[in-house]
Image 1 (cartoon, rainbow, N blue to C red):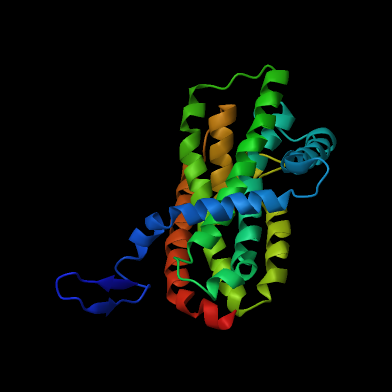
Image 2: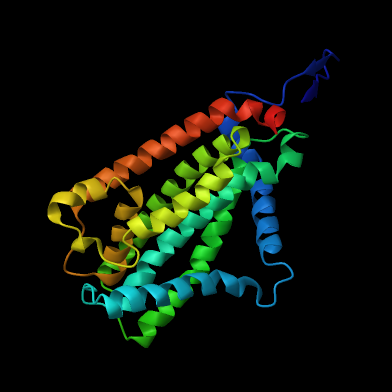
Length: 279
């Protein structure tokens, strides 16, 4: 950055990167965040026949499979709600998390041309990936609304707590996404590890079933998966079931999300300066 003082007429050159102004720069470059997110939305569904409808088809197909397997064949309990709604209420946060994690892990490599040429807070790149996934999350919410209208299922007052659980889901996606994005720059093995984590995580998370079926002595251990608390929170807010939230497990998941977010930001900032050299 160049600053020319009118009184003294001397040229002062300052580095574009400033440790103390980093968080202020995030706000200054907010238009770049909008540009990156909008570009990714356009590119994702470019030259597809049904376009953005793909954001709805994937969770709907998964919901149908889980409803048949767990609801029809296994005949698992549905907390008093129609089983498709039980599953889709969990598919919303899981789809948001998995898509955010997958896109975050490759976001820096996909924008290598920007990282090596101009200065801007690199945190904007994985953040834009999460924002794009959040747009798909909002679109998928239309499907859930349609299911509730079809089954004439009316939510309780708890639905007003949903924004809180959305923030927690956003924090979980951002925290783990920052770790994966930073590690993938140096260790390209993570491009193969992340899909495995997501596939494995889908089956160990209470997406196709209620976490209430987990034996009581194992529920706290099961909550070491941070998405358990997020999914249970979504179901509690949307379904308003009588089972409620397993509070010790929810608090443990909330603590883990906070640790992942704080440590993710810390590690990302620590290695951020090396991205342009490694890429």
